Length: 326
Ligand code: COI
Image 1: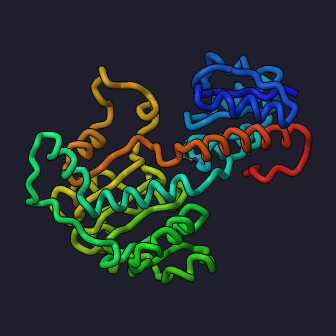
Image 2 (image 1 turned 135 degrees about the vertical axis):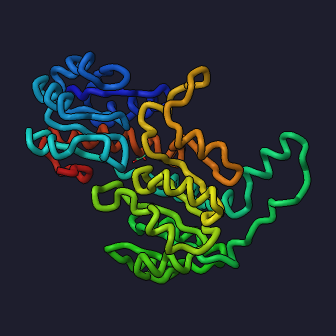
Image 3 (image 1 turned 90 degrees about the vertical axis):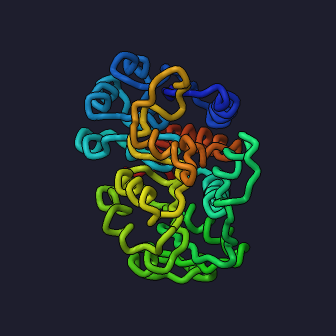
């Protein structure tokens, strides 16, 4: 059985070899980013493993014509795939549920970076400015942290935060008992009003597009810290920039930004950045930006590759597939 793989990175190689052997499948390395120029490389594969790059309707049609019936993305989020079109043409889609600890650890680091003003401390120290003015931080035990989204990652974040002695508020349509042990579930407006730090942990949907925007920012505490390791589209970037400029938001730590596709994971050091909002955010001393790397640990990469290959093999064999989205 042949499974097509797109966008394989060198650090995934050993995990792919191991997973192929364990599942008894043959992997066909189809190329870098999947697009209309290389989609025919998938001929003969009923299932494909891809990663974050966009899969619009014409590419789905081309894969379907090549005989592909299942696309597994080696990511939790699948908002880069035109799922409405996939459903329409009968293309099945799967994601993977890799170690949530990868993103949870990183989130705690981002929260600490924001509340301890680490970007300003490090940047200034690089120029031998070792003065203390303007870099006094706050201790987490004195703060209230609001966690929006308490799925697998949000729950891990709450567990970690419990060790810091801060007050934890949580918000989700579906509440869970593990979170209730350490956090108080409250409605969104109350979380906005009471939190010193707000961290986001939801998938991107049409309903939560720009949920952090002028209106919600207006309900937050002065100098709130905003942390986003989930999806850029959750935040109206322009509104966040304005709130950072006028001091209503005290700090931001962002692993994701709007319109990051095509930028992140590429070496663009000799190219003008084609995302002005990202350039503005990167220029602020109180805004720490990383290129969507919260997931990137050895454990998580192993999970991503292994689960995606297993998911493709299960689909092709008609077996139970826990990662099937539809
Ligand atoms: C996801 O798994 O949804 C992620 O955000 C990580 C991905 C960009 C590699």
